Image (cartoon, rainbow over all chains, first blue to last red; front, side):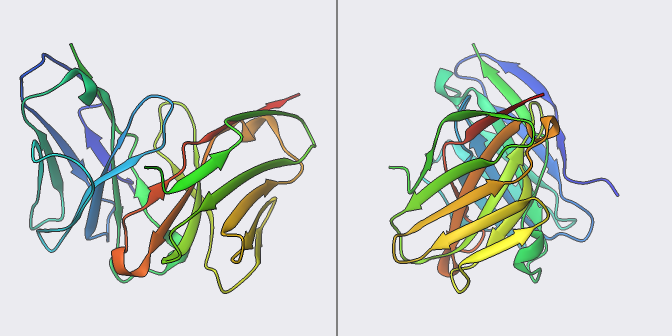
Length: 115
Length: 113
């Protein structure tokens, strides 16, 4: 059973460009959250998608947007990239009705470098 | 501002020793407190979690102690092994904001042989 799959694994972009990151949730999961993890820091919540709608959002500017597809996969889009957007972007999934014991399953992330 | 404060930033423990990591929070609405383990190049993996209606939860060599009045919780790793060398994160979330995990800054644990 493949867990959470993220692509690409690494990406280098130039300031001002736009980027799209992709996530396939674990089989049976329908809720996807995105996190940004700067080097040496804990993950910071960006937003969460359920039933193809953004349900919650963290303190991130509108340059960060997302989408969830009918097959539960998700995309994270970042426009007008800044150097400070360089980070590991993590996707996490769970089944909405799942108990606490299983929590969220995280992918290995996409390492974005903005130059 | 960081809603979950974690300490220490790093610690070194000998094989067989006990690793203790502490976290404190301010938001009394938090009602779910998980701990995650992260290895280099990997995403965080859930280790153990607790709700505030219990003061302690043990799973294998990992124990969470929870002090609701002090708004603090800690992770104890008993009989630490070199394979436990990783970064550990505490986190918290609330029922009215389910799924939005607030993470601590992390503790890098090194277990020496």
